[in-house]
Length: 381
Image 1: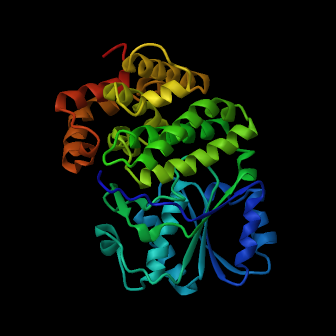
Image 2 (image 1 turned 135 degrees about the horizontal axis):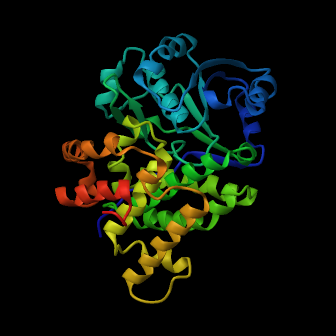
Image 3 (image 1 turned 30 degrees about the vertical axis):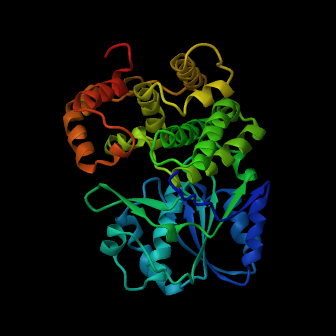
């Protein structure tokens, strides 16, 4: 048997009010990287006015939904000048990715974007720790070994390195109480897409496979309840998002994430798009050996492997309807003229990047059909 490595996450502290663990770092110089969406909320005021009131800290910057080189550039001299011992990232995936990159700029004073983008990043001195405090249950970026940044040509740059991972992770369930239903739905589907996609990748260690299957089951059992405000379900989803991040760190994202490049171009929410695409990429992959156990744990025991997995897909569609997520781009309101004429370009870009081939090997016609299904659903294709 081939020997496969499994990368675990850093130390994780979880529970209600777990953010008080920041008190452990009161003797350090702390730089805060903060999601702009929580900047005015009581939870952030509490961090500054209570938890860190006796600490040396500085707010390095606020992060929007899509981190870019242009947005990060003004923060680089600021974090280098402050030279923190510890960076605390408080927010969603964009905040985590920004903090990971800023950590590299802080640790390597002479590096630039060319160095960071070409990868892999190696030899960080380790003088600056990173503590990740996710406030959403979606990207899993708090424990992944990558950061996704938009470059100056408005294209995604994927930065990969084990050395940019967080040193510690705080999962505070208290932060989940006020999450809007739409955020819960979109981020939750991103979690499901992470693990369903990862389960289709090779190589996949037995540990990553087990992890991915259990996360998928957890999401399918808890997302609707979380959407409706059940706090126990939100706890489960927060843990699932973290475990999904750990899964893709040890495999990769799947076909749905490899075909979603148009989302940024059309300014569509990432979690929504990955969720929609997952329906069609899952059907494309059926029957897949790793999906049967998910189906069986949900109670679908009758029939062939394919029949069980088809019932799983039906359950996914039922879930989407229950949490008011559209089943195709047309249903969401994307205009034909903004999407359909670009399909051939999307296919050429997919083939040029080529990352999808670690998952499967779709033909041009396969991709053409998938892109049309993403837009119309199955009924009109």
